[in-house]
Amino acid sequence: MPRLRIAAIDFLNPAPLLYNFEHAPAAAELATRYDVNYTLPSQCAADLLAGRADLGLIPIAALTEDLAIVPGCTIASLHKVRSIQLIVRGNRPLEDVRTIATDTASRSSLAYTQILFRSFLASDPLFLPPMSADPVAMLTQADAALLIGDPALLAIENRHTIEARIGPCTWIDIAEQWTNHTHLPWVAAVWAVRPEALTPESATRLHSDLTASRDAGLAHREDIVREWTTRISIPPGVIRHYLHENIHYILNPDCIQAIEFFRAQAASIGALPPLPKLRFLTT
Ligand SMILES: C=C(O[C@@H]1C=C(C(=O)O)C=C[C@H]1O)C(=O)O
Image (cartoon, rainbow, N blue to C red; front, top):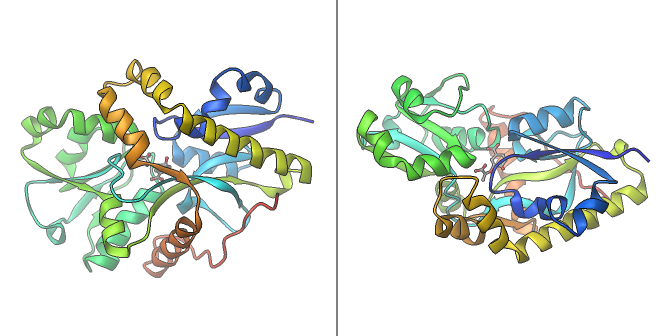
């Protein structure tokens, strides 16, 4: 049986979901069944849709009718996510933001930001073509910059340096905006597969491998804090709070309702194609 090719995300937030793939004793056995490749969220979706991967941790914005969600795991937030920041120059109200620079990594957060402006605030700013995640360069070209993942966490740590160059900014947590407006969780990503890449046995095993990895990761968050403290310039207390309080890893019925609502909202403003029915992997 060939190994399943996994497209995974190279940020801090998915680390608990991938714990068993990266740590003994489970990693050696999982390596006989899976081949993990780390990339940006937008690229995970592109790899899965193009058939370069069989399984991807993909933005919910990239789900199509051909892909099935693997039940159990998600990257979501129940209130503030911290790592999705809209940095707005000055202290203007959001309604006065006219141009937004976006980061090539994002698919879901871009659509969430479009929903925030078009549906919730009834304004219509121009979204510039995606660029690399450099807050100063982005804010030099636009009224606001959308950053996701580790670059957003690092920007918060470097806030004084950024504001020394750009001037004072208002920092908006996109998940907080969404949860306040909808009273639903904010969901960014799920594990998704092309179902034809799996047999019934490999689907069942995949589901149990992914769920077991999530549970091991959640139980070993302190190990992840230690490892990531050497990988990223963020204080351990912030990493710990992020993994415990900001990110929610369990795909529960509220998260599924949130995905459906997000896709309906995104379709209603033309930001994403309609996806009337979510498909789930049967295991
Ligand atoms: C919470 C985050 O969620 C990520 C945001 C995504 C997006 O905006 O498309 C996709 C995958 C998630 O890992 C983050 O990276 O900060």
